[in-house]
Image 1: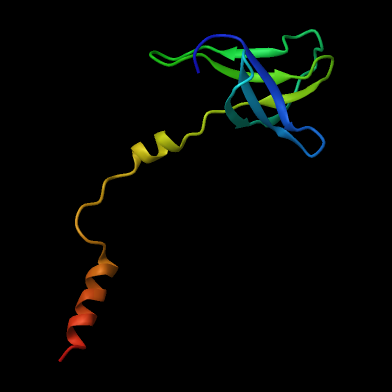
Image 2 (image 1 turned 60 degrees about the horizontal axis):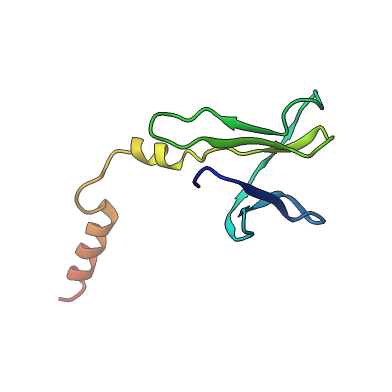
Length: 109
C-alpha cells in the first residue's frame, strides 16, 4: 500500500481479535490481514511500530497495540516466497507418472 492515512479496524471484535481490515482515508477497504497475538510491558510504548524497509521494499506495519492495553497484534511476512525459491526445480516426468503410463500400455494387449 502506498504511504498515506489509513484506518485499522478489527474485522469482528466480539469474535476474532486477530483479523484486521485496513481502510484508506476515504473509508474504502484496502486489504485484510491476520496478526499474531503480541504483548508489551510498557503502556507508553508506541501503539504502531513500522519495520525498517529492505532495499526496494515498502515499510511494513510490524506491531499494533490497542490504546492503553498491553495486548495487540504482530504482523509477520510469510516466508512462502523464500521457501519456494530454495526448492530445486524438477524437470521431466515424475516417477509415478511414467509407471502409470507403462501400466496403461501393458493392459491394452
